[in-house]
Length: 254
Image 1 (spheres, rainbow, N blue to C red):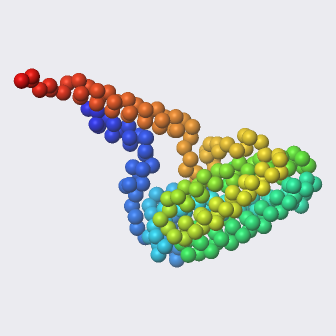
Image 2 (tube, rainbow, N blue to C red):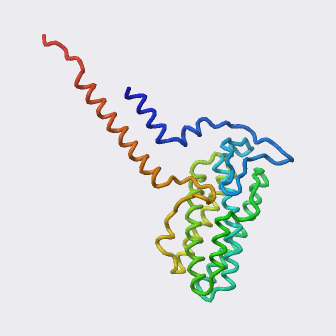
Image 3 (cartoon, rainbow, N blue to C red):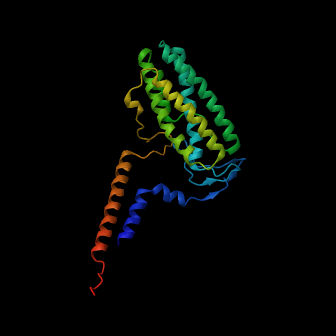
């Protein structure tokens, strides 16, 4: 009974691994010259199948990284440009101007990469991102500086996690190169935003992804449940070994 129970617990612990093992791999179906995807306007690409490309398999996480970087460019670039023009804080103006220019460069990189891979991209921010734009540009003076610095820093922290996942695990050469460069840009942007002196500790926390672009980080509830189940597996295994040793037949004395 112990082995089946352990197997069930391990499946609960690592659902993503069990799903990934069962994913279909194949070429992306063509439709009007472009691969078809189950593209959700908020969550991104919901299709779990890998695509065959000349540069290696293109996973759901790979495609969603391109989609998320595009989403980030759509709101962070224009909003940073507005802040560079409106802010009277020298640090905020300088950082906002640099972010505005570099998000344009990132957008060109995304366009060049998807031109080869055929991944459809969004053309407008998500509803959540639009609410951030409205919040930032709806303020003025130091309140706008504060809102822009903290919201933008938190958003960069979220996508930084997705970039790290793809850079670590992708089997696609183009995506590995893209993630490497994107990682350098986003890391630099986080450092620049923190240099304004306005970023609060709460903005360093990667929170819930409800209503936000696709993100692979587990929630705190899932993390605690996973640790608890892992401990349970260890305890049950230990008890099984102890019980097996207790009832091991002893050799009769000669």
